[in-house]
Every structure is written in structure tokens, then in C-alpha cells.
Image (cartoon, rainbow, N blue to C red; front, side, top):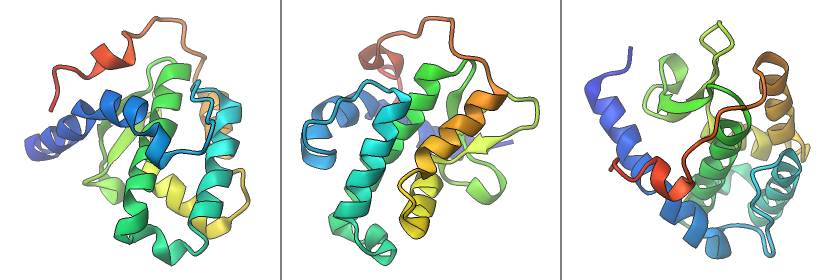
Length: 158
């Protein structure tokens, strides 16, 4: 069970979601990025990151951390948008202190977008994000319930 402090940190991070995803795509995302939260957009995003961050050791450097933060938000929101019951939550265990996507597959699976991006930078296959997306798709049905618009979804947080 996440602590109240961990929940507050994730809520603060989520409070900036709309601004970060909608306004910062031009500075932090791929040029002419079609940010539709579709599976295919994840390969485009990953290719951009692999080109922008040629060495995984650079990922934690100030010049790149904002790009990773934006990409983690986008990847996580893609899972939230596409799969029923997926939602942001504070990470537990090895993901403690990170915002993760709780995957309602009955096993307590957590998908850490930031950790997944670091794996993508290490492995450099160009398909780590879609591989993770496909794993969630195999375990969780597609979303059928409508979500509030992104600008409203986290407006009361932060």
C-alpha cells in the first residue's frame, strides 16, 4: 500500500499532465508527432527517443530528463486511454516513488512508463513500448467506458 506522501507526489505529477502533454509536445516530442494515443504512435515516439538520446547513460542528464518525463506521460496516458481500468497510481515494490499504471489483470501488474523508457533506451530495439502495450492488450480488454477529456481528468490534482 502506497503511503499518503507517495500518493500526493503522484497526484502533483498528474496535476501537470494536460499542460505537459498538450503544450510541451512541440518542445519535447517528435516533430509532426500525431499524438493520438494509438499503438502506432509508440514506435514513432521510441524512434525519436533513440535518436535524441544516443547513449542510455545520458537519460538522467538535465538536457534529456524533460524528454523522458514527457514520453513517460504520453506512454502512460496511451495505456489509460486504450485499456479498461488502467489508471495512474503510486508505484510499489521496485517501482516505489514512481508513477505507474495499475493494470487490472488480477495479478497486481504495474507498468512503469519511466522504467519502460529506460529499458527501451538500453535495448534499442525500437519496439519496447509497443511490446509492453501488446502485453497489456493481451491481459486487459480495450476501454469501453468514456474518460473525461485530458484537460479535465487531472484538473483537481496537484
